[in-house]
Amino acid sequence: MTARRSLIRRTALVASTAAAAMVLAACGGSGHDMGSMDSSSSPSTTAPASAPASAGAHNAADVDFAKQMIPHHRQAVAMADLAATRSASADVKALATKIKGAQDPEIRTMSSWLTSWGEPVPQEMQGMDMTSGMPGMMSMDDMDKLKKASGAAFDTMFLQMMVKHHEGAVEMANTEKAKGQYGPTKELASAVVTAQTSEITQMNTLLSKN
Image (tube, rainbow, N blue to C red):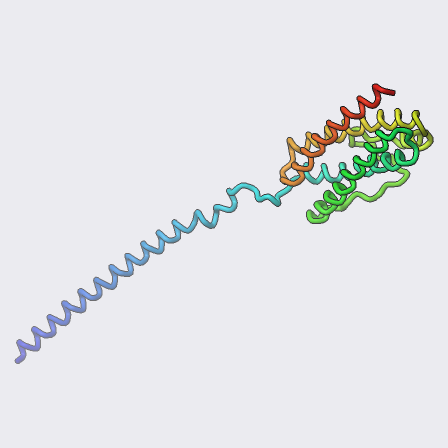
């Protein structure tokens, strides 16, 4: 009877030892699996940092382009408004209407970009010289001369000034195309280059007829 009880105890001890070994093995396996999960999940948490910039990303070149092109466009629109009443040429008036029709909406678009980026929109600077840092801008004296001209003299002056103005805009737009990051701004810059290069050709043709 005593021998039988001893046998039962030894059997129970062996069973409990085996069970303990199985538990330890299972715990060890679980730890390895967690380590594998951590390792495999690491790339997904760091991927966004190395991913390409989103379509909404912008840089300093985009901001500079918008801040400079807005007053640049405003001056072109002001010149176009003068042509409506002082030009003697139907072709010049039609060109001025086209310029204003294209650049007014672009001013609003660029203003909305600056606002969305948390940047100030340039204020209307009436009576102040805005030529600094913006190629092709007319000086206050230039604008005063244009305001006092009329007829054929106005048309010649307007075309000469607007050619220079457009050339400055094309230069600024090419800089944005090369250095900008925000897709829509670069697209607008490309549109400016295409449209205003064409208008420069048109204006030089009109000047050759004067």
